[in-house]
Image 1 (cartoon, rainbow, N blue to C red):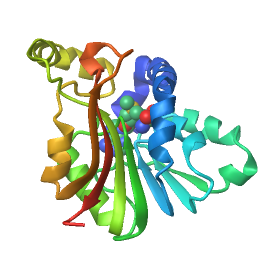
Image 2 (image 1 turned 90 degrees about the vertical axis):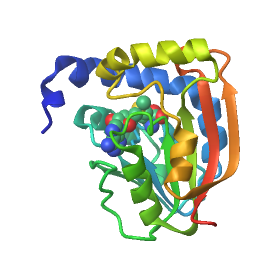
Image 3 (image 1 turned 60 degrees about the vertical axis):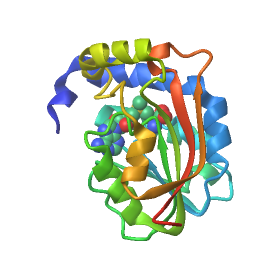
Length: 214
Ligand SMILES: C[S@@+](CC[C@H](N)C(=O)[O-])C[C@H]1O[C@@H](n2cnc3c(N)ncnc32)[C@H](O)[C@@H]1O
């Protein structure tokens, strides 16, 4: 059990905030996750907001989440789903720095607002590459370092405070570069400013990536 589990903010308030905030991007989530196929791993699946957004055609979803309080909410989300959907989903309490799945076992890996929060994104992306089958796809949706110099300055300034109350979330990651640095090729890539997000987290990237030269 981590020290975070004893912190009342992380035990009660953070999972509640996460659950509400993650629903703001439901249309974007539904659009991206329609591309999921076969055996799917969702990294940092949070409170399970994505569970309703996967196509019925996927064969299985492993929802990997390290935080016990957040995962409890995901278990509640799962319990409220129809049995036909529920039976395909398995919650795995684990850290994405060491993914407990075999090499070349997944058709799709999903990172939805999670590469901002993992301690070492290159290590996590290397693990994702390991578990993806050749030709398998990483679907990603992430907030990143802004294009605006003024916003960038505030992202750097506020980052220490933000990460301490946002579960380690970093405001200033250049995640597309990290995905490429980990050996993925960006197959589809969109970068835009979200109209209703605060500018600190409003620069978004979304798309698909394949491992190696794919
Ligand atoms: C901003 S939340 C997003 C949750 C979810 N993907 C969503 O869209 O609602 C970031 C998530 O990453 C998880 N996370 C943080 N570090 C992680 C790690 N090392 N491995 C896996 N997940 C991690 C957090 O517990 C949290 O659930």
